[in-house]
Image (cartoon, rainbow, N blue to C red; front, top):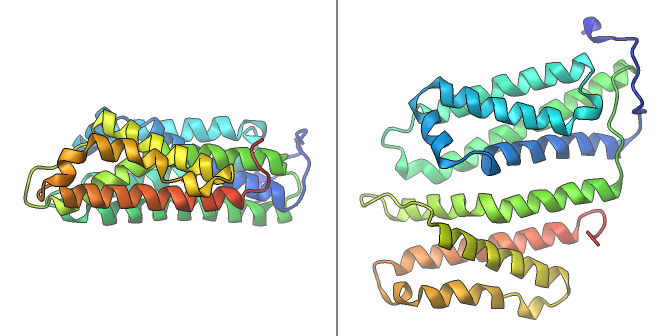
Length: 262
């Protein structure tokens, strides 16, 4: 640990809880960008074939994390954090990618466990950084404000609504389709779902809670034939319930954000 001490001091002064929260939020934002926005289906399939895909994905996550930590990344402590992040991410994703034989039944559970493990790693890194900063004053801390933290929260909420929830819907529907053909994310369905969730959240934040269900009508109307079919109705019920619940939870989180976006 003593080797991490350095006489170099950056322009980012030490401060209190806001900076510590900003570190965790930036790490979490980088994770969401790397795990969802910057992980296309082609890369997912590469990960299942071998370590090349896993390492390519991990490299993307680490690069995005380094960019979001750019003001302090010159310090050796943060290089150690990025190295730890890379190793942990590779082990978690490698374990999931290489053990998917006959695992469709557990796809939804794997998704929750995978994200919980990643979030746990980020929490541990932020906590260890806090302890290290208390002992080694030369470790810089990110300058933060309620506005910047709030903006990060809004960005993560947008990623969650547009990229994460469709994966959640897919895994839930595949559990219902067990024994049949594995379903895939349909582009039009993804964006209709994103529209209903973002629209519903926007209406709640604007104070028009009673209008929040309206954005959910277009997808329901376009899928009305499926709602009439007993074979597909369970999928649509689960999909709509997940979309509605995640939109509601997101709205509640954003209401509690440090400051409004505007």
